[in-house]
Image (cartoon, rainbow, N blue to C red; front, top):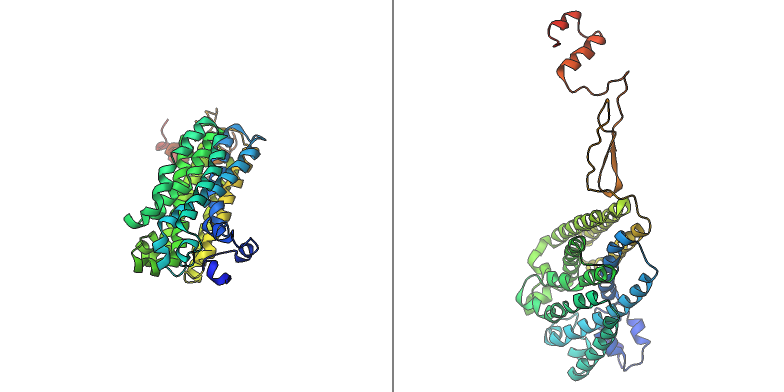
Length: 376
């Protein structure tokens, strides 16, 4: 069999596929096992949601088991999602040069075989679902309509990337439900990761703008046009802000602040790389988002394992100190603003005009006649 006819044009690891038995290769491509980036981007939100809630409770040894189960579920469900996407998009894929050699449009897999393979992957996902806590089971079930509708979004809206964000980051809610509950900080984080997905999937869609325009497929890459890179960075910026807010709400401390800043720095690098390559590096930049997601997961987990003293509120109340203003004021992420206390010899800052005039008189700047204008 000619490998150039069985490996799609956008395959990332054809060597790995070539080592599989010939009959398995089309199914590996159907599930995108040759391109693990999508698996990581589905898996990492589960870890991020779990780690965010562990900021409150601390990390448990059993979380390692959850991490493994999340990975198995991500492999199965991402493969099932890609298989379903290829089933619904088989006619579109046949019209796009990058996807024309995928298993269904090329005839390497029949439609019936694709449905059977879809069922097998869903069965693996069901096994993982059965071991989840009840709350997490209910949350996971709510994602099914999102997954089912996603392939059709590119036909009815210019924002299929936003729908992908809703779908791919649902693991944040599942991970949080496994740890405790889906709280307000979790919802804030979920919104932030949706913005992140819009950014990286817009970058991915830059590769297909010409083909998509020919066959009428909509995307944010086409919608944003020449400003696609700039607008994608704006979504990165919004994502970083919401990640920082969610971290602050769960007392992530300085590690949480640093995590959000590094995530933003990665977004800046992505935009710079795209601009310098005139968007030719779109695929490589898209893949680099695995590191951006891993950075957030690792940062939250590290903060959960090394918690800082908690504050009762975002900004602590002012402390009344005899003889001077408060010496410190607490800020988010464990920072504080310090103010040196005045001493009898150094009265410190002067806030009233009368006191200022007296100070100038002591220094000899003004003469004794100033007593006439100094109030008693």
